[in-house]
Length: 447
Figure (cartoon, rainbow, N blue to C red):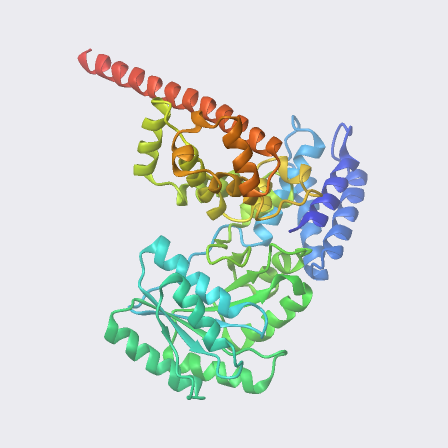
């Protein structure tokens, strides 16, 4: 995601390296390069032109800090303009009514149905909502079945009427069912076409009038670049939607849609899809995306993902086990599963400043833990519980059972021992610091 654009922008800033100050000449040369980079990323021509004009105005303005190096100042200005171009700050869903209704629109193949499932999962797991999904696509044969499968995966009910070919009627019936059964959010998946046509627009407009949704979200495939922006404009002219959802941002997208769509349709990007899993949906943060485009990482999002998988009770149990040197391979497996739930490993690594660039040409498969899990699953319950009993003969048996080499088994056990020692040291130090802080607090109270 954005790799090519990130590289091009980095090269643009090199023009200012070693320069003593910002001048008309070096700014013009840098901006010429930046404009080319944006156009190559399939950014709308007018958007790219306005962007570089705004950067130039700020770079040549009187408020430029004299103590900051030109390259650093230009990066800061470009960062702020990128964030502003994509909306400035995150945009929340506005669900005023009960039940709140969310209408999903877009072309066929954009990922509407998958997004509907992801959104239901997010609202249920993170917001404590009780959603219901509505199968409103009466044309694509597999659409209803796909939504039912997704609903089963996330344990969310699906309102479907396979024999009814009237989307407005289906939507009205779904609202009545949601009210009757106490659902507080209704997510209506609608039909798409391979291209915008009058029948489709009339149909979804009729659905909108019939159910008066709180939010209309336009789902667009980020891989389609500038075409996505043009389609969004046509939909917005008819529907006046509330926000955009960019899907497939985990693919080889140049980034043009993400950078252009906000300035063209004047509507915020609200969500981004970053994978096939139901958890692979993120709220869109323009400033964080600007960080990632400029190779600064995204530590805040990484911490948030970790917190989502954090279980306080489990953490307390783990700390006690570490303190008593009882951390075992069952605990190790739990930690691996928590990391896997956080999302695509390469995307996670890219959130760490500097790491994304270092790993851009390195393939990190989602099943990178597969061989480790195979080795651990080849151990007996007793061996997982008591790693110290893993002698030579047991290790050979584990290697055979997991289809691994004995060297791989030895390497994993060594890494496990080193990890256990490190975690024990950290846990011990943390506990010691907490006790010290508590004693100091008591002393301060006595004073």
